[in-house]
Length: 304
Length: 255
Image (cartoon, rainbow over all chains, first blue to last red; front, side, top):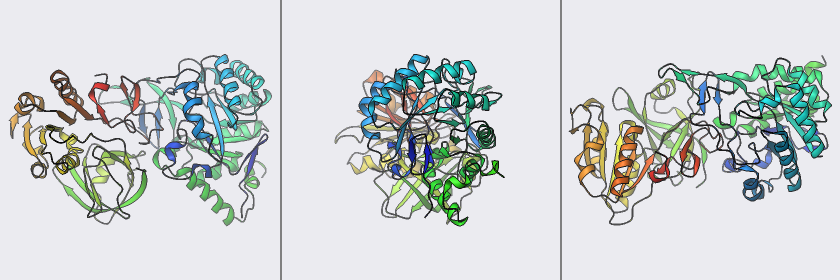
């Protein structure tokens, strides 16, 4: 029997496989395919205080080994979440984590307080890295002073487990990891999508309505892995690795680089059962290697 | 009806012309209830350029044979790869996805309008309508005679009308110029095809007070309502083509 359990701050996870925000809905969409409570955690679709219609169509483009998206945080707002989504997701027997977004620091704080009051939200992932909204999002996450301010404000308002989701669209991501740690984040998650673009040469127009969008999928994995490794050497807080994880081997690379947990994102679009297959694959790998505990491989390359 | 992920075995791959082919797929387990208008997300193996699944209307269902059919137009690397599948190959599907067309009530007069690859969801719909005791009118539009496909299949089910843009078969022009659409009385129309065609049919139905449903095709990643990429602008805001559609009442669309 392999021990797959990990901890982030005071929060225990039965296994280190989570789902990335915006790729797993609220989990309910996947119930036909598998018992989503088997996962270590579910990170919900990003929520804002007010409902958002998101960006105009077209919102996606397929790219070599990946895809671009510009959804723009479409969601039905916090009131709707409390009334219609929370009653369902609070029944899951795993960690349900909210992903919060806003245009102003006050939005983030208000959301953190409201999620806190609900009772069964295990943690908050602070999204300061969405590349597809004009105000907020990545604007916070790519400026050190703004990052510090918003993390500090949310930390003061929220005593639960706080995860800060970092943008890769910066020169030195480890600087932002340090800021998150200094301001009291319990963990950092990375990477959000890489800013990219694509052009349709038939119509001679950009493929996306907003011209640029966020790149995800296997195409970003080497970049994500490098950034996880850099952050692992810079901070002591746990790191949740995200970026093009399609199978157990990909996930294991992230553990070896220093991630304590992983989020499966784009893979769920292609195979709705990806996350649970990755979980099974990690367990099998550890058994074959005769490693009794996932924690033994976390950051292993850094100690050799 | 629960969605599934399942490996099918190719029973047949019938080439219809340069651009179109029909895959016949056998399921390993008894098929679930599939409603007309629903679609499948197909995983394309062996095409490195094809990263995401490809959505296709379910063209036909045969519960006795436990098979479904997909009518596919070769449009890129993904569909080209699928066109090379041979009997015995396997194909992974997530299905049945999306909502479905409204089956008419007894006594209603209905017209199905399909253009080009938009005829794909119409065969199974026509079959279901016929099973409900109504002989559907079926209006098919193609660019020219060489591109006319499955005319006989539709003739077995309903009253078929044909247009070609160059007049090489049927009535010359677009489907919206065909007398059956313009001059006959219908309670309900169903349409799938190029957007200008669907808009023209929707406009005609709106003016004539005919209920009209269209099946939309938008770029999508997941097919199950989580990526939020395939949205369509409606009177109720942005809705997902994959879960709120692909069938929409044209009154709800901001056309």
